[in-house]
Image (cartoon, rainbow, N blue to C red; front, side, top):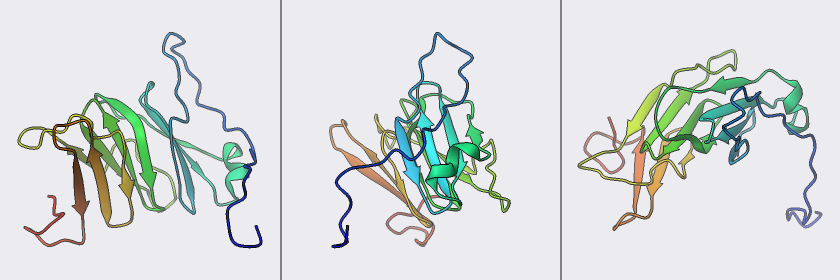
Length: 169
Protein backbone atom coordinates (compact mmCIF):
# COMPACT_ATOMS: atom_id res chain seq x y z
CA UNK A 1 0.00 0.00 0.00
CA UNK A 2 1.11 3.55 -0.63
CA UNK A 3 0.96 4.40 3.08
CA UNK A 4 3.52 1.68 3.89
CA UNK A 5 1.01 -0.70 5.46
CA UNK A 6 0.69 -4.39 4.60
CA UNK A 7 -1.91 -5.31 1.97
CA UNK A 8 -5.19 -6.55 3.46
CA UNK A 9 -5.34 -9.59 1.18
CA UNK A 10 -2.62 -12.13 0.53
CA UNK A 11 -1.68 -13.73 -2.75
CA UNK A 12 -0.62 -17.36 -3.09
CA UNK A 13 2.35 -17.03 -5.39
CA UNK A 14 2.94 -20.75 -5.94
CA UNK A 15 1.95 -23.77 -3.87
CA UNK A 16 4.87 -25.55 -2.22
CA UNK A 17 4.87 -29.28 -2.71
CA UNK A 18 5.53 -31.21 0.49
CA UNK A 19 8.13 -33.98 0.33
CA UNK A 20 6.84 -37.41 -0.66
CA UNK A 21 5.25 -39.27 2.22
CA UNK A 22 6.18 -42.97 2.00
CA UNK A 23 4.27 -43.76 5.21
CA UNK A 24 0.66 -43.14 4.22
CA UNK A 25 -0.52 -44.17 7.71
CA UNK A 26 1.22 -41.12 9.17
CA UNK A 27 -0.45 -37.87 8.11
CA UNK A 28 1.51 -34.80 7.13
CA UNK A 29 1.43 -31.42 8.87
CA UNK A 30 3.60 -29.74 6.23
CA UNK A 31 3.31 -26.02 6.90
CA UNK A 32 2.55 -26.25 10.62
CA UNK A 33 5.51 -23.93 11.17
CA UNK A 34 7.14 -21.55 8.74
CA UNK A 35 9.96 -19.00 8.74
CA UNK A 36 11.46 -16.73 6.10
CA UNK A 37 14.81 -14.95 5.78
CA UNK A 38 16.25 -13.11 2.79
CA UNK A 39 17.68 -16.39 1.44
CA UNK A 40 15.60 -19.29 2.81
CA UNK A 41 12.02 -20.35 3.35
CA UNK A 42 11.77 -23.01 6.07
CA UNK A 43 8.69 -25.23 6.47
CA UNK A 44 8.14 -27.63 9.37
CA UNK A 45 6.14 -30.86 9.51
CA UNK A 46 6.13 -31.98 13.17
CA UNK A 47 4.04 -35.12 12.61
CA UNK A 48 6.60 -36.50 10.16
CA UNK A 49 9.49 -34.91 12.14
CA UNK A 50 10.74 -33.20 9.02
CA UNK A 51 11.86 -29.68 8.07
CA UNK A 52 12.25 -28.58 4.45
CA UNK A 53 14.49 -25.64 3.52
CA UNK A 54 13.86 -23.87 0.21
CA UNK A 55 16.39 -21.34 -1.12
CA UNK A 56 14.50 -18.22 -2.21
CA UNK A 57 17.08 -15.96 -3.82
CA UNK A 58 14.72 -15.55 -6.79
CA UNK A 59 11.82 -14.78 -4.47
CA UNK A 60 9.32 -17.01 -2.71
CA UNK A 61 7.32 -17.43 -5.92
CA UNK A 62 10.13 -19.60 -7.35
CA UNK A 63 10.86 -21.60 -4.20
CA UNK A 64 9.26 -24.91 -5.17
CA UNK A 65 11.27 -25.07 -8.42
CA UNK A 66 14.58 -24.87 -6.56
CA UNK A 67 16.74 -27.42 -4.79
CA UNK A 68 15.60 -28.09 -1.28
CA UNK A 69 17.19 -29.56 1.82
CA UNK A 70 15.40 -31.97 4.16
CA UNK A 71 16.38 -32.04 7.82
CA UNK A 72 15.26 -35.09 9.72
CA UNK A 73 17.58 -35.98 12.61
CA UNK A 74 16.76 -38.93 14.78
CA UNK A 75 15.27 -37.83 18.05
CA UNK A 76 12.12 -37.64 20.02
CA UNK A 77 9.43 -35.02 20.19
CA UNK A 78 7.68 -33.18 17.41
CA UNK A 79 10.75 -32.05 15.45
CA UNK A 80 9.58 -29.13 13.30
CA UNK A 81 6.91 -27.86 15.69
CA UNK A 82 8.58 -24.46 15.45
CA UNK A 83 11.16 -23.04 13.07
CA UNK A 84 13.00 -19.73 12.99
CA UNK A 85 15.90 -18.82 10.75
CA UNK A 86 18.42 -16.28 9.54
CA UNK A 87 20.49 -16.67 6.40
CA UNK A 88 23.14 -18.57 8.38
CA UNK A 89 21.32 -20.35 11.24
CA UNK A 90 18.12 -22.29 11.75
CA UNK A 91 16.54 -23.35 15.05
CA UNK A 92 14.01 -26.20 15.03
CA UNK A 93 11.93 -26.99 18.10
CA UNK A 94 10.88 -30.47 19.16
CA UNK A 95 8.03 -30.11 21.63
CA UNK A 96 7.56 -33.26 23.66
CA UNK A 97 11.27 -33.97 23.49
CA UNK A 98 12.06 -30.66 25.23
CA UNK A 99 14.75 -29.97 22.66
CA UNK A 100 15.75 -27.38 20.13
CA UNK A 101 18.15 -28.15 17.28
CA UNK A 102 20.40 -25.46 15.82
CA UNK A 103 21.67 -25.91 12.25
CA UNK A 104 24.31 -23.83 10.48
CA UNK A 105 24.26 -23.57 6.68
CA UNK A 106 27.27 -24.37 4.55
CA UNK A 107 28.90 -21.69 2.39
CA UNK A 108 27.26 -23.24 -0.70
CA UNK A 109 23.83 -22.51 0.89
CA UNK A 110 23.05 -26.17 1.58
CA UNK A 111 22.23 -27.46 5.06
CA UNK A 112 23.78 -30.36 6.98
CA UNK A 113 21.64 -33.31 8.04
CA UNK A 114 23.01 -33.19 11.57
CA UNK A 115 22.54 -30.19 13.86
CA UNK A 116 25.34 -27.82 14.81
CA UNK A 117 24.07 -27.88 18.43
CA UNK A 118 21.23 -29.45 20.44
CA UNK A 119 19.68 -27.65 23.40
CA UNK A 120 18.06 -30.12 25.81
CA UNK A 121 15.96 -29.23 28.86
CA UNK A 122 15.65 -31.50 31.88
CA UNK A 123 16.10 -31.16 35.63
CA UNK A 124 17.14 -28.77 37.12
CA UNK A 125 15.46 -26.81 34.28
CA UNK A 126 12.16 -28.67 33.83
CA UNK A 127 10.31 -27.36 30.82
CA UNK A 128 7.34 -29.32 29.55
CA UNK A 129 6.71 -27.40 26.34
CA UNK A 130 10.10 -26.22 25.02
CA UNK A 131 10.10 -26.52 21.26
CA UNK A 132 6.53 -25.37 20.64
CA UNK A 133 7.72 -21.85 19.81
CA UNK A 134 11.12 -20.38 18.98
CA UNK A 135 12.73 -17.16 17.80
CA UNK A 136 16.28 -16.51 16.63
CA UNK A 137 18.54 -13.85 15.20
CA UNK A 138 22.25 -14.16 14.37
CA UNK A 139 23.30 -14.22 18.03
CA UNK A 140 20.27 -15.17 20.16
CA UNK A 141 17.85 -18.09 20.44
CA UNK A 142 14.73 -17.68 22.58
CA UNK A 143 12.73 -20.74 23.61
CA UNK A 144 9.61 -20.21 25.72
CA UNK A 145 8.09 -22.91 27.88
CA UNK A 146 4.41 -22.49 28.59
CA UNK A 147 1.95 -24.56 30.57
CA UNK A 148 4.45 -25.07 33.38
CA UNK A 149 3.59 -23.84 36.86
CA UNK A 150 5.90 -20.91 36.14
CA UNK A 151 6.18 -20.12 32.42
CA UNK A 152 9.76 -19.56 31.38
CA UNK A 153 11.75 -18.14 28.49
CA UNK A 154 15.19 -19.62 27.94
CA UNK A 155 17.62 -17.22 26.28
CA UNK A 156 20.78 -18.56 24.65
CA UNK A 157 23.11 -15.85 23.42
CA UNK A 158 26.55 -15.94 21.85
CA UNK A 159 26.95 -12.28 22.82
CA UNK A 160 26.92 -12.87 26.59
CA UNK A 161 29.95 -13.50 28.74
CA UNK A 162 30.14 -16.57 30.96
CA UNK A 163 28.01 -16.23 34.09
CA UNK A 164 25.81 -13.45 32.74
CA UNK A 165 22.15 -13.41 31.69
CA UNK A 166 21.59 -15.53 28.62
CA UNK A 167 24.87 -17.42 28.70
CA UNK A 168 24.71 -21.05 27.65
CA UNK A 169 27.52 -23.46 27.11
